[in-house]
Amino acid sequence: MAADEIRGAAQGSAPVPLSVLDLVTVGAGRTASDALRTSVDLARLAEHRGFHRYWVAEHHSMPGVASSSPAVILAHLAAHTDRIRLGSGGVMLPNHAPLVIAEQFGTLEAMAPGRIDLGLGRAPGTDGATAAALRRTDRLNEGADDFPQQLAELVRFLDDDFPDGHPYRRIHAVPGPVQATSPGGVQSPHRPPVWLLGSSGFSARLAGALGLPFAFAHHFSAQNTIPALDLYRESFQPSAVLDRPYALIGVSALAADDEKEARRQVLAAALSMVRLRTGRPGLVPTPEEAEAYAFSPMERDFVDSWNANVVHGTPDEVRSGLDDLAKRTGADELMITANAHSGDVRLRSYELIADAYGLATPASA
Image (cartoon, rainbow, N blue to C red; front, top):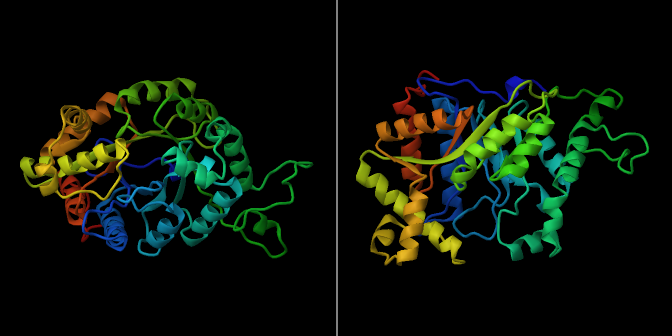
């Protein structure tokens, strides 16, 4: 695996490579089909404008987030794009058997050779009851505690290199390297690079110790960003994958043609988070609903705190905020997620950010 399958190159005047994190958000009055059509349009836009990669996150039991099956969505996006890297940001490893993930992402790699990333998290991506339903057990801590062992097993399946005597030595993830060892077999030189995702120090330390790329969820754990990145860099050991650290951070950002409209849009997204955090998950409300909503003092404090970490405003304001974030954190890549009720608003935001940085236009891409 080459490091150039991990490291991106900054485009235009951007300080670092820019990428996209898609939660496949569903707004009130819209369907999951509408959200998935927006994802196709957004992936195409990202490819044409020079964004480096496009990731989909695994979530469950959330009406406003239609990304419960990242591998299925990525296969759909692979069929509608040609060059952009596609991946999971992430697949929640404790929810799945490692062999299943190896098979799914081996299949994606066969569909889009050299374009697939496998980002892995250890959180459930949902509430405890749903996690228990996914895992068929209520002993949820075991999944998190066993994460390093599950990761090692998954990598063995991806590389097809269980040692002699291992109970899985004769089990193979297909598509995968075993096909090259079969009579007449030819195997792709690529295999999906593994990334570790995190919102605290555990995955940062593990990614560093294993010499893997690291993605930090700044968009919902901003207070831990710099400590986690410092820990990753301090823990980093060169590996066959990377000779030096490579860290991206996820960041919520929304650009609009004027500042007032940006504030309206992020207020609606914040109301959606209020409802999620208080056990009332639903579709992303309209800006009009959010403006009419009677926030309690506690809810208002949450909204103010949440939106303080959302880079929003005019294109120039967003560019300045992203530049500052890249400088403060030293991140090697910024992965932008734009949460809004309307797919058109999300698409417009990425267009405006691309324009602000002078990224490629479709005619020149």
